[in-house]
Every structure is written in structure tokens, then in C-alpha cells.
Length: 251
Image (cartoon, rainbow, N blue to C red; front, top):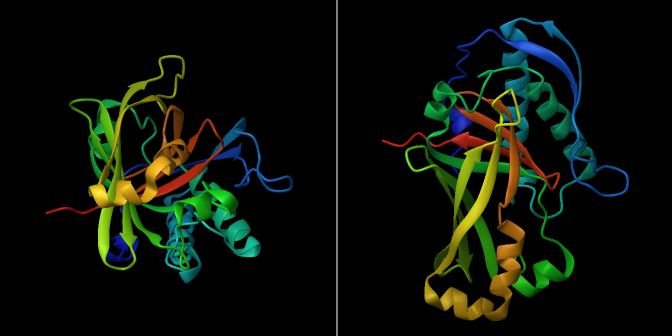
């Protein structure tokens, strides 16, 4: 199953927490709840580390809720999702590592991360075509991202289970570069280099729907890292999707 790293790892607050009054999108971009990816920055104010500790404690509890067994990719209860997105914004308003793409920030980013929640959804015809979900042939188990700062690459891996018997990986390798136009050193530009699906049996099962799978998980565009510390990362991409990841504590 998915490593519950926030349970296993103490919360480390290594930096003075600065909570900023920043308005972020509410979550999914449906008519009533999805916003644009435009952030409105207003006045900032100093806050104690306790604000960050409290916000992360609330987030930990919600991330471990059975409602997120599918990481938010399929249907999520509206009230639960609203509460979760509110808590995520509370964390985003606190600064862990001020400049996520500084040398120190990349030192923290480097390594393996596991996705705990996203507003990227696979619903309707797309879900049916890919045979995904509890009632489908294919179940998504985990989604990982491995960042290699030395080569400026990110490897996104979607771990599948087919009929409860065959495990497979859909892997997308992408190059990234820091956006020089963003002074806060928090935005990366991303471009896909390659995509593979293993084992071959899984690719045969998907057939022409491989391109559909790629279109869903392709990371091209830009990603804003809105919060980063030693164990937790939050980001929002140019398509309005939100991602919450935890660092995998590898030996």
C-alpha cells in the first residue's frame, strides 16, 4: 500500500514560518468549485511556527482518510474535498523553504516522492476506456515522482494493478528548468522526453488508449511549488491541478 509518511515521520520545522495572506484556487475547475491558476498576492504577516504545525497536523489527518484511497483521481465527497482544499491553502500560506528552486531547495526536492492527493481527475468516458477504478480491470495503486537534480529530470511513475494479478508502471520522463521570469524561484518549466508502459501485456491491453493515458498524465507546461519542506510538497500546474506529495524515506 501507500507509505503513510506523515504518520511515520516527525514534523520538522527548520525555518521561521511566515504566513502570507494569499488567495489560491479552491480545487477542481468545475463551474462552482474550480478556479483559475491565478494567484492574488496581498499583504504578508509574520506568524509563529505553531500555525504551520497545526495546519500540517490537520492535513495529515485528512490525507489518511479512506476518502483518499484513490488520491482524489476519482470521485471525492464534496464536503470532504472542500475541507481538504481549505487546509491545503492554510499550509500554502506558510513558508517552509522560502525559495524551493534555490540550491538548498533542490537538495530537498531531489529524490523520490509519492502522491497523496490531486485534483486531476479521470472520470466518465476516459475512466471507462482505460478500465480504471474499483470496478474496472485496472486499479491505480501509487503515483511516484523521482527528481534527479544532477540531470534536471523528473520521472513520473503511475503504478497499476491489472485484475489483481499483474503489476505495471506507466513512466513519463521529463526535463525541467527554472523559470527565470519568476523571482521567487518557485516555478519550473516542464517538457516530456519519453513515455513507456511496462509490462508489454499492459500496453497490449490499453492499445490505442495509450495516447489517452499519456494526455492525462503528461506534465508539459509549468508547475508552481507553493509549499516545500523536508517531508511535504504542494504544487499547482498551469492546467489548474493541485498536487500534494510526501517524501519517500528511502534507505
